[in-house]
Length: 149
Image (cartoon, rainbow, N blue to C red; front, top):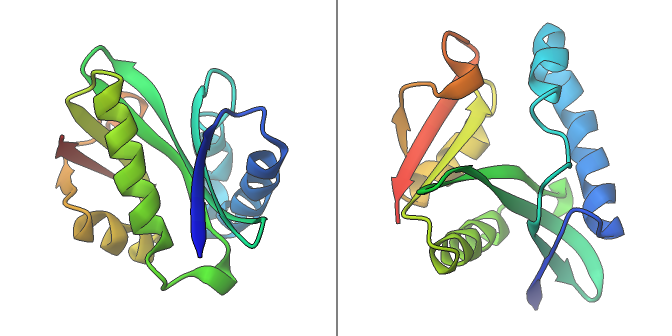
């Protein structure tokens, strides 16, 4: 059974999963990795979810304030051996629930064009592709998405 707990970015299991995520992104982002990595620091991420099975961390996700009404979904990752089981969808639902509890009415996120599995998961969760926001404006490799809570 999957358990999902709320924590923050100082959680060591979260930090380890983020290391796996970053290794994966180095390959997928290619030459653009340094640009994207600058926006994925763990500083100021106070709302982190950790998915575990049998007390082993297998997935994570976080939200970070973008503006007063909007939370940005960050650092979504599920270990490859556990993908295809709906864990990412569970994490997204819980992140949205948490965002709503915090008073946000909207969630946004950015992913890469090469992240087709992630795009599919987000679309299944009700996110729609929108214009690029903030630092991603004009970045053709970015796919930005939005969902009204």
